[in-house]
Structures are given as structure tokens and as C-alpha cells.
Image 1 (cartoon, helix red, strand yellow):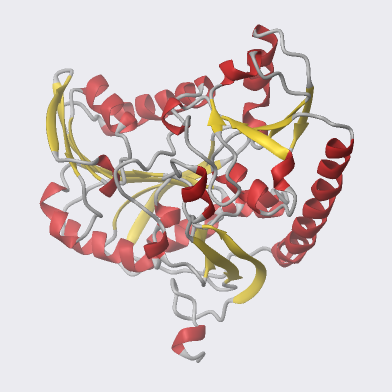
Image 2 (spheres, rainbow, N blue to C red):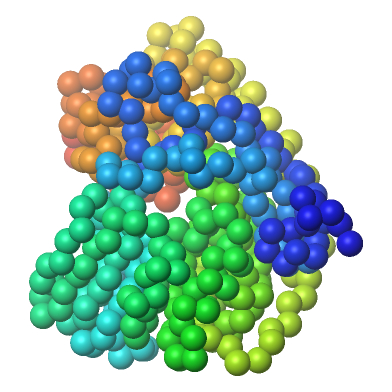
Length: 391
């Protein structure tokens, strides 16, 4: 049996093997600096990804949650993009119909600015509780014929009284260290009630297998495949009733589960090609960094004005990984909450798209290909002609 420090933090059986490292990267992508000086002093941490061959969990063994400011002002919402709005509205409607969420008591773990919770409470006349340290101050407000109560805390056993008829957690579980321990605690709080769960996370396996090298950032300490995500719930004594991939070419994966009354069996889920994917990822990252370093120097030589579109996780990883990122003078983001701030470590100012009408770019680097068409439409509407490049 491996020494405890060498065991998988989920199944406690596997001996995870390292496959990727990145050092001194910005730790916080949600709480952006307000000044260039703050940006230069941004907290940074190291990434060392390891993969378990038994349950399939990929985790960052260097993760330190204390480096991240999960507090008021933290903002990573995607609700400002029409593509995401259409998707999440569909998720909301499906869950209401499937679980008859009308006039029910709901709990969202990690609700952020509560857009999803507001939507599902307004549409179903539900009464929701959102627990998240970033919501600022406690509040309790009407929401259509329903209501929403927000609690500015990390979810813990002390909140079990808020577990009602349904529990959801979207784009948060990948940020929680020791995920099985967290689920076991939740399972204990539910007790013998038949409370269904909906958890949705970033599809980490897909990002690794597709060599999406800018998709690895510090805040996400866990990277799941669909099978390994199911394993996490089975290890914590939940029955997985439904699971699958979703959102724009399988960017996300989800699990629907209920408490189990019988022990769950977990088998090794890593397909043979996954080891190859892991080995290829580090090589692809290095090659991409080298390519962009050379490309940016060409832009500098040609006197091109280069801006980056997207200040989220991919943007942070992209810029902080390049030794000559200073060639990129500006970052554009449609989220107004992230505008008028600065990129951590690399210090580029973040502005809304309107500024491009005044300070026209020669090159726009798109950090997230999902929104390429939205970006193209915005540039066309402003009569901006420039080179568009996918990071």
C-alpha cells in the first residue's frame, strides 16, 4: 500500500503519477487587481498535475486554497455571453421538468452571483439558498413567486439545515480539494432522505486529450472525465442516475445522483489512450509557448498593435505562460464587472469592446475559441478589420 502522502486523495488506493507542471502562475482568476502595482504583486502558485490510475482523478498536488481570494468582488460569470445564456436556460428548464422543481426548497453550493439560482427560483417559484463566500452580505429577497437567501460562507456541515428538496453545484466542484471527502460530508448531511443532486464541472479529460493547453489554471485543483466524476459520487455512497457531456462540443460534464443505500463499486476507468494523452500534453504546452513567443516577437518587429480577448482562466494562463506577453497591450472582456481592472502578474488593462473603436487593433488573439463567432460579430458591427488568431 502506498504511503499516505503518495495515495490518491479520492480513492485512497491509487498511486497517482505526475504528468504536467507549471510554476509561479497567478493563483486567482476571479478577483482581479485594481492597479498595475497590485497586478505585479498578484499571488502565484505552482501546478503539479497527477493522475490516478484507479479512480481517474487528476489533481494539482501543489494546490493551496489560501492563495485565492474567494471573497466579495470575485467574478467569473459567463452569463454575459448569449451562447452561455441560451445553454444555462435549457439546463434550468430541464431540471425543473425532470424533478418537478415547483415551489420546492433548493440549495446551490457555490452560487456565485446567483444567476442560475435566480433563474430556477423565478421560473419554478422555488425557494433557494445559495452558499458562497463571494456573495458579500447575507440577504433574503423575493424572486418572482419564490425567494432567494444568500449566505456568504463556504459550504460546510453547519449548513445541513438548508438541504431541502434538491441540491445543485455548477462549475465549483473542480475547485474543491479532496472531492470525495466533500461528497461524503454532504452525503452524511442528507441522511436517509432521497434528495437528488445535480453537479456540473469543466470537462478536464477532454481539455487534456484535445491538448487545450491554456485550460489548466490554478483555481481548478481537480480535472475530471465523465467516468472519474461518476466515480467520485460512487465512492461517497451516491447512486448516479444520469450523467453526460454538455455545452458547446462537450465542454462540461454533469452527474445527477441520489443517496445510495448499498456500497458502490468503483473500477479503473482510464482508457489505454489516456496515458498517451497525458504524455502528449506537456510536450504540446511547451511547443505552444515556443510558437507564441516567436509569433509575438514577429508582431513586435512589424509594429502591430496586439490585444487579447478574454480575461478568464484561459486568458490568464495564456498571458502568464509567455515570457514576452508585454507585447499584448490590452485585454478585452464583455463582462462589465471585469472591466477597468488588470490581468494578474502580466498587468494588461481590461477594457470593454467599445474601446477598440478608438484604439483599433491590428491583431486580436481569442483565448476561448467557443466565443470566436460572437467576437467576429462584435468586431464587424464596429467596422473593425484586423487579424483574428486563436490562442
